[in-house]
Image (cartoon, rainbow over all chains, first blue to last red; front, top):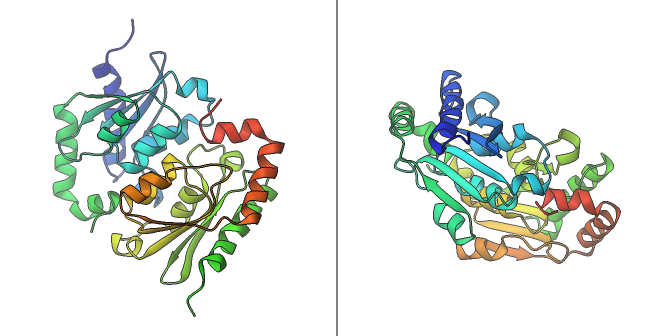
Length: 150
Length: 150
């Protein structure tokens, strides 16, 4: 049976929790193709000192080099509304569908994705909101750094 | 003396050549702050098997974690018009100025950058055009993979 979006989100949430357990920022992602999870990833700013490893980009890196025909059948599942960089990565590779856990704690490039023809689904998941709310309260400076704000 | 944009571009071109010498895609970038080159980078899709290490993102990764106040004074210098992902990375970190070697062989997110308030300068540099023209002729499939096309 094809997994539901909520079932797919569970993989991204697990990746986000793993990131937090490592002392990092709790945002995770999963790249899903034909109902199968091809790769997961999570924000690794803290763990690897990298400003480009957000949940979605880490996931794309973990998936490795793929032909356009695979991205064209993919869904990017992410716990949080994608930032401009991750929005751009989704557009670069022509990923046609994005499933977002929540957009209450951060509202990213959803409108731009839609304007470029990407299907965007927001699940408004309570556990995703809780993960980010607790993290932002605990480490506001780290969070601001991750989204390019003072 | 403050270096000119053409002088800054030379750092990105050197990085692009280094990438080609490694068997990779000849696109390079430099992050410049207050006239000083803070970091350089080049596309490492081939070298590291990574779909997220374009010239600009590799450069940002090499620069490491920076406060927003540094990005706010930065110029991203790149040999080629930035793709959607690199456009998004520039926007995420609020980099206010982008210097582009050329946009003849690929036209990226320049209009979107401008619409978001970023200053974009295109130098139309013959050496940058030559590097990409020769590369695309030699390895068209690799190039298409890098820009998410068949």
